[in-house]
Amino acid sequence: MTASQSPSPVPSLDRIRVGSAPDSWGVWFSDDDRQVPWQRFLDEVAQAGYSWIELGPYGYLPTDPARLADETDRRGLKVSAGTVFTSLHRGPAVWDATWEHVSQVAELTRAMGAGHLVVIPSFWRDDKTAEVLESPVLDAGQWRDLTSGMERLGREVREHYGLDIVVHPHADTHIDGEANVARFLDGTDPDAVSLCLDTGHYAYCGGDSVKLIETYGERLGYLHLKQVDPEILADVVANEIPFGPAVQRGVMCEPPRGVPELEPVLAAAQSLGVDLFAIVEQDMYPCPPDQPYPIAERTRRFLRSCGA
Image (cartoon, rainbow, N blue to C red; front, side, top):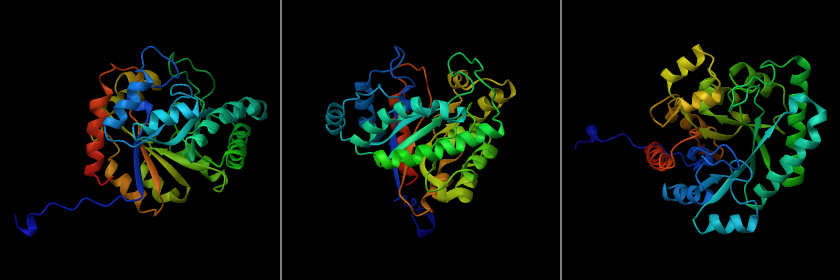
């Protein structure tokens, strides 16, 4: 092979730490008969070549820190983040219940040595039944409650637990596509609130991940790597299919079969010059128990080919 025929070098993504999550094993709930046992998830995520994981829904993995540490340590796994769901647009009345839930998850997250808490806004449409629970559009007062509540949450979590919150735009929530994500970021204090960019959810809602990183790079604190199948997404949008049923149709697909292309996203994130977790998530709830592992293994190989 001549020099001109040499393959292009794989870019160095030395600021990106790749991991996976229970979501990629079809896990959405703390307890569900259609999900794989937590022991199998831990075994398979390690076998697939990942060393970082998220906690997933609180209660799916053991909540006793000593037991969970033993289970992760002997598999060579470390925890990058916990996850909470909030409804802060509903105002001060929900703060006490929110803090009780957040404190539980944050305590375990800190005990496992992680530094991030992924915060997902509550769904305006039920992801199991597709029932519309509230208006998909917030009024001005609800936006104020959402932004001020999230700032308070960020400050309280950092003060009490030493964790940074990263807010996760998500389909069928009030923080979803470009307009609402920009409004949320413009309305919150960068010192209190960072962003968890989920490339799949952002594409699902019509957003451009590279553009977002280039515009709001200083707000990016965490990544979820995910792709959508554009043909299935077009049908989902045309027929206003809720997120849960859309997932069952396969709207979230295995990389690199979907959009957005992950190589430019990873390159844009690397160019920020900060250390970032990039956690693979492929929504598959519910799925056959033997489906996730081969996908996880292939996805890890693909990300290595990208330099991650």
